Image (tube, rainbow, N blue to C red; front, side, top):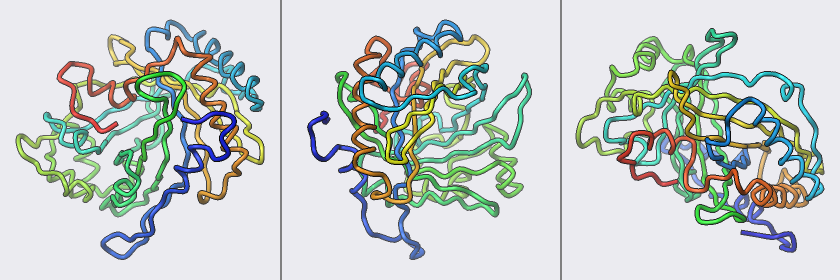
Length: 317
C-alpha cells in the first residue's frame, strides 16, 4: 500500500523488479510491457445499462479528486459490446490449480459472431521470478502475441491498498493454429491434457494425476458486456482507456462478476514517468474509496467462473 506522500510508489517498485534470464532455447525472457489496474465489482449492482454511466460518474469524481484528466469516449454513448468467453480445464482443475488459464473469446455484433476467435493462454503468479520464467510460447505455425502484464488490484482484506499479480499471456487467433489444433480447440471437450500440452508446452510442468479430459469449466459459457467509459490522462504523455465489464452466464443471464479496468502499455520500466505512475496509483486508491459500496475484494473474474458451482479450486490469485 502507498499514499500521496510516498516518494517511490508501489507501482515503480514492482515495475523495476525484473530478472535477466533466458528460456531453454536461449531466448531472453519476456519483460513487462503492460500495467493493468483492475477493481472487481459486485454483480448485484449491474441492474441495467444505466449502471455503466452511474459508475462512470464515480470514476470522474475520483479523477477530479486526484487531478487526473477525464474524457468521455465515443463508445461511452453506445451500447456495450458483447463477447463470449469459454474456459478450458480438466475436471480436477489441473490448469487453474497450477496457475494456468486457457480461454477462448469470440466477439458478437447484432447477435452474430464476428472476427477470428481469440485463444488466450496465461500463467499468473505474484512471484516475478516464477512468472517471468514460464515460457508461454505456443507450438503453432501461425502468428501469436505475448503480453507480460503487471496486474494491480485492491487488497483482499480491505479497501485502500494494492496487491499484484503478474500475468504472462500469449494470444492468437484460432485461424493461426495448425488444422489439428483448430479442430481440437473448437471441439470443447474432445481433447486431453497431454494434447493441450502439445499446443502449450508450458503445461508440461503439470503432473496429470486423475482424469485428464479437458472440457468447458463448470459447463458455463460466459457472456461479457464491455463498454469503454472514458480516457484517463495521468499526465506526462501517459493515458489509458478505462472500461467497465459485466460477466454473466449465457442462457439465464445470471450475473456473477463485474470489473473496472484500465491499462498502460510501455516499452520498459523506465518508459513511464514517475509522476504519471504516482497519479495512476493515487487515482486507483481514491476510486476504491469513492466506489467502496461496489467493490468485491476476494476474487477475480476467472476465479468467479471457477467457483460458480461450489467446490472451489485452490487458486494462486
